[in-house]
Every structure is written in C-alpha cells, then in structure tokens.
Length: 294
Ligand SMILES: Nc1ncnc2c1ncn2[C@@H]1O[C@H](COP(=O)(O)OP(=O)(O)OP(=O)(O)O)[C@@H](O)[C@H]1O
Image (cartoon, rainbow, N blue to C red; front, side):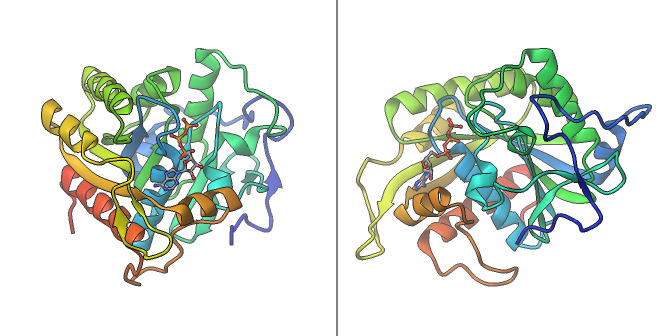
C-alpha cells in the first residue's frame, strides 16, 4: 500500500503546470548530490519495448534486495509507472508546502511520476523543452527523496528533451540501461540509444533484452517464441555489457494492465518465479556494471 503521509496536502494537481513550491535554494540540486548515491537512467531507442516495465521491476528488485530506491517517471507523454505499480489514483503530497513527498509502493521504494501532476489521463501534455527542463529540475530538487542508494529514472523512448535535461541536471549519474527487444528493428534503435548515451559522456551500463523468449503459461518453462539474442549481439558489437534477458511473461503483462506490482516479495525472500529470477539477474548485472555488486 502506498504511504502518502497523513498531514499532507495535495500539490500540483490542478492543471498542466508543474507545482510552484516557492522554494528558494542557492543550488537546488546540491541536496540530491549529497543524498542520492547513484542515478540510473533507463531508456530505449524505440517505443513499446517494455522500458517502463523493466524500470519498475528493476526498481522493485533493488528495493527487495534492501536498497533504498527512488523511481522517477519522466515519460511525460506516457507516464505508465503509477498504473503498473497500483498507485495511479494517488496525488503527490507535501508535508510543509514546499517539499514534495514521493509515493511509497513499499517502504524501500518511493515513486514520483509526471502522471501525478496531470489533471486527467486523457489530456495530452503539450510542453516545450524549457518547461520539461523546469519540471525535471523540480523533481530532483523539490522532492523529499531522503537518502537513496539508487534513483532509477524512466525516460521516454528516443533521445529527446527529457533525456538531455536529466543528463544535464542530475548529479551522480552512474550510467544508462538500454532496453531492447530481440527484433532487428528494436536492436537497430537500441544501437542509436547506446551511441547517444556515449555522446553525452554517460556510461552505458549495458543492454537488457526484454520480451526475449516466453514463459509458457501452461508449463511455466521458457519457450523461444519470438527469437532471442539480438540484444546480446548488439551489446557485443557495440562493446557494452549485456545485462541479460527478461522473458515475455503473460503474468507480467497482466499485472501491469491490472495495476498491481508484478514482483511482490518482501526483502530477503528468494525469487520463486522464473521472470523474477531474470529481473534479479539483470539487477545484479547492473550493479556489477556500476561496480557495486554484492
Ligand atoms: N517482459 C514482458 N512480458 C510481458 N509483457 C510485457 C513485458 N514487458 C513489457 N510488457 C508489456 O508490454 C506493454 C508495453 O510495456 P511498457 O509500457 O513498459 O513499454 P515502454 O517501452 O515503456 O512503452 P513506451 O514506449 O510507451 O514508453 C505493456 O502492456 C507491458 O505490460
């Protein structure tokens, strides 16, 4: 259940505007630099490859492994994270009128999403680059993230304003995880995403191949439905780490559509589900890439 704080009031829910918290700080990003150990960007070259699903489950896996984790959904035009984690109806709150509180899915995972600021789900967000930049700055500086081991940032597909802004603004960026699917066209787009990250002087933590193979709903074993290996080959060709694969799992899709977290185990509990195991393996590979492996 989400913890939203009892003494809090809603902020920024009225229009297509970011909340004016009125906070005057000398360097508003200094706080993040001190309190957030690592910022991890999750991006993809192409839409619909499951980037938000990977980001949400990766963040949940980190929380399950005892890491204090934040998840920032910057997919301004299609913020799906709250729906996937069952916190869609929640509004952002503030305890003191200036600082925004994340919404907690579990005590170790706080979430902030553009979706919380939108008046309704059907209204498109029409923002130019500078507005996005301002919103992203506020999400970093005005949110009470607390001390975080990891802040996972879900970016929109492609290499637009959001990616440029977060790279410019966020301190302690450990690197970027690029999500792809096995199909050739997605792999080609992931190559562009890797090159973009490299151009920005950010470390490519590696490539994840999502929807790679399928967990059979009948026997629970993996079957090779749409092929596998495109992400691995792209990683080898580009000389970046391959972080592993996450199968196409009908239960994962169902959980996302029904608005409940897919990974529900508590800290310390072992994975007894094939897809969770894959997510855990990807998480460990990301930590190895950062140099923080257990
Ligand atoms: N491994 C998976 N197994 C089953 N379903 C998946 C998997 N990964 C993603 N999906 C499903 O695919 C759909 C698209 O996923 P998601 O929204 O995460 O993609 P995205 O790349 O973030 O999309 P967008 O381009 O809109 O940002 C969702 O219905 C989600 O539940």
